[in-house]
Length: 511
Ligand code: N01
Image (cartoon, rainbow, N blue to C red):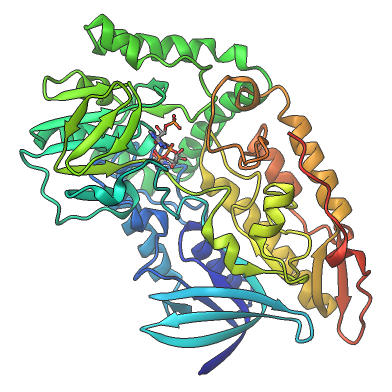
């Protein structure tokens, strides 16, 4: 078996893994390898190729601050353009030579005696071992498709496609199509499928709140200005950022102040749907913001089309030929599109990462909920930094901003390790618990906790462990510097690690 030794292994070549690779290079850390199971950069933006896939955060903010793109064609970009952008940035920063594509990490385990992460990977059917002093888990929270727990999937004789694993060979023209789910992915793909399908049944469990999408193409003059007028693109970026942060206030601290957003959503429904029964079905019953606020001008016109039915009776089972609802009606389908999201707090990847006490992330998080320190480190998993880890997700603005905050933290961590000859770093249980208690305290009045909805933002303990509470500039502030006091560290030639860091019992989750 081939064994490869590197200082730093980065798992994942999406926005965060690529960002980490670039920052490492820029700061003189050249001994690293990026590993990704796909065939190019982009992560979720490579994998989500369903028709209509697009970003609902404006492009000028949904991009790296160190790689502005004056050429964005539209105010909100579509998937192919974002995917292209990420690969262009990778090319410009020459990180491809550090990257192993089509390489799947099957298992990653911390070996205490060697002070190394050992990664078992499979590449072209060949097993290899990568040994790294530091592992960066840039695996992305939205990468493992979630198949709903509905009886009968195996019996279905037609075609099943998940939104995050699109199959371009499936022809929807004139077909009877069923879509399960009405989240961010579904509201983008349903309008496209409705244009070509013979019949389209959309199975809605919970109606989403949807604001209009103020999307438009940029003119040649605007693109010229973005490229040539000093500070113009940064100013636009800053303005988008500032406007979005206002929403953060409402989501976290004052859900009542989101009432105007709800009125905009209600007007969107009233404007687009005439049939009172369909209007009622399409109107959510939870507080706006409790689930992600979606953006679309096309969803309501699509579900009002004569060839589209919004089914709200609930799914009883999948049959050989279609879907049976809870009223006993069976609707035939040639293709079922499953737009039911991702395993976020219960990702199967968590089983593959095993820390110092021989326990996997899945074991640990099953017990305490998805907790970490500053979204980056987890007690008992030394020398491992997660990108977009616990409590870093957002409902209101660009994840790239959060990723870049973590990149600051990562670089300062690595510089500290280099300067001080550190061989082992483990966040203390006390620091992690204190941090999570603060996060949960900050979330107590939020719409995500009190808005009356079920969402993937919550873990199985009922805690919101995916979202950052409040303003993103606060996360930027706390990740500016690596705060070594929160960690048990061991330096070259010493073994000063206190016993409790790996072995102590974590506090149970509090719902
Ligand atoms: O997944 P979701 P998604 N029976 O989990 C329904 C990001 N994103 O892929 O609401 C019937 O949001 C479920 O119903 P309910 C973004 O962060 C961003 O759409 O749970 N229905 C829901 O309607 C987003 O939040 C963009 O009652 C079932 C849907 O499936 C995240 O990805 C674009 C069901 C799942 O919605 C995930 O979005 C796209 C069942 N058993 C995605 N199980 C941007 O524009 C689930 N559902 C940036």
